Image (cartoon, rainbow, N blue to C red):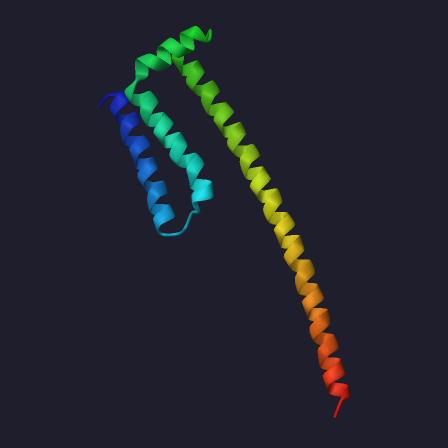
Length: 119
């Protein structure tokens, strides 16, 4: 089996696994979009491998594999930053919900106290 065929199979496998996870609602499309784009880019680069060699030579990389590793590293850094932003947004939402819940509990306690005082 050639490396090209294995790359195509792995890319398609990742693509369809992510689609299945979205379909079964185990992954939201917001997070799946990055994985789907990555799988499609990997599929395109696997099919058009001469493009990778030409691009890596044009950018000054000695070997196409060095270019692929550098690109993957940049992609992972970008994904890490993106997930950190999503995590910070979720933390802000959790803090806001905890504050609202505290206000509601205080209001319920006050209503119970005023209802208990009246005959």
